[in-house]
Length: 135
Image 1 (cartoon, rainbow, N blue to C red):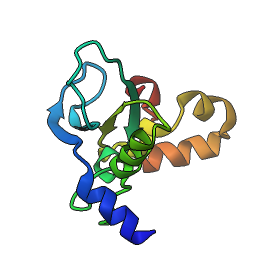
Image 2 (tube, one colour):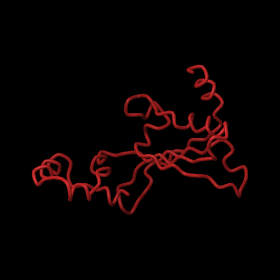
Image 3 (cartoon, helix red, strand yellow):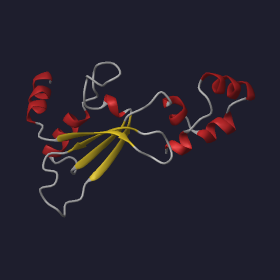
């Protein structure tokens, strides 16, 4: 399997774009990594699916990945697209920030299901959840 993965990696003609400090009116700006699949833009009327993925710094490049190993999403999608298993798909990787826990933790769960002590402990460690603004 490893040889086939390496072969796919070498053949991937997709394109990776990095948009640094992409602004938002809801949350602080952050980097976006956007992967365009093989053949993207060759036909002006072709439509693509889009996957929005959190922790975008981990998706494509081991140099930016938290653990030094990327998730290889582009290689899997390239293979599936080439096999005809999935249609053309773009990936928008949204990088996290130091506010990661606050942005990913659902605010309604925080309000409804945490005890007063759990809420106090959470706020002391992270601050109030920001997921509604993030979403």
